[in-house]
Length: 133
Image (cartoon, rainbow, N blue to C red; front, side, top):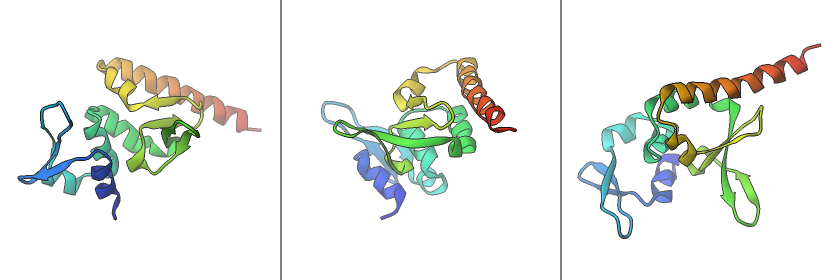
């Protein structure tokens, strides 16, 4: 099964009228994405759409994904590394800081997101400087 289908199953999305919907108990059905978007975008685009993250965040993480490790939380094992489609968190490799998709949703001011990115990049710069002879 391909990653996109696994992502759809994880979130229990329903396909109807050329679109994918979230339909949870005691909640109204709402559109997540249409088939055209599903077909043309990558896993990170779909994952961030499901988690209601803005395009600036998609663009940043798409361009810097190698700096992050996808994780989910297991109550017995703690944080475990998973494929991106199954992630609920991203661990910044240089700092060890873990970003929750729900936390990223709370950042609604672009400059606040840029400040977070700059803070994380400062760890990367420090790590590179430590590694230099």
